[in-house]
Length: 313
Image 1 (cartoon, rainbow, N blue to C red):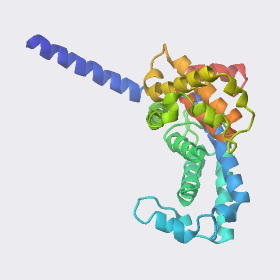
Image 2 (image 1 turned 90 degrees about the vertical axis):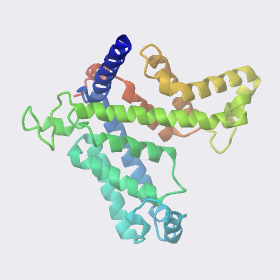
Image 3 (image 1 turned 135 degrees about the horizontal axis):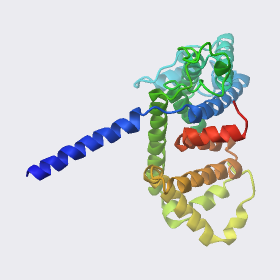
Image 4 (image 1 turned 180 degrees about the vertical axis):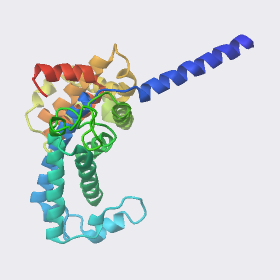
């Protein structure tokens, strides 16, 4: 009995130490800085699209008009001031400010302010566009939300060029390893695992994924087709194999990505899957932002070495 208690106590101590190390070990900001640059550029692009079609997306008589959107959210917690705004001038100002915030986020200028501002303005639009959202919008908002926690603007940024002192400040934080960087990274990683897990589980409910024909019907869908992939029809075994590999990878990503042995293969598969979505199905922005999200599993030291090779910073 004493031996069992001692073993249990030691296990709990080891688990506690591991939990603390997982969440609260200081980490460098270079991976998050890369994600910040990509997300800022994507937010700028998205808000420009919304700006140039402002009345169709957000106007009083948009595809989903104001009374409809208020009714859709009558019984939930989602809220946006754009539920009540249809004035074109106000909407244009909203989007111009959002574009500016995206540009500042990309450049890394006043990122402590620019990132929360970009996140909030984008969230307001996303709540307004219920029923007309794209996976890109939701993923980029998720990434931006977690970047607010970190010091992603402390390197590869204009803030780092104008830092007043080596210790930094709240507005221009130091580039030293920080716990907040690790917390933000872990939150992105876990959220990504949840996305893939439920994506894989939902696919398992579809018969075409089990019979191996799902990728074929995806490839020949003219709504998304950006290149002719009908030649794959001559290789049904290849289609079935790719379908099975895809659903296995997506479902078990949440387990495979944590092991150092399987992580490289898991991330390589992510690039292939989302690169294929970007090139073969024409969803370039969504495929790109998912690859960017997977960068969260690249160590800051590896990202720093890559930056040095590219002569960044």
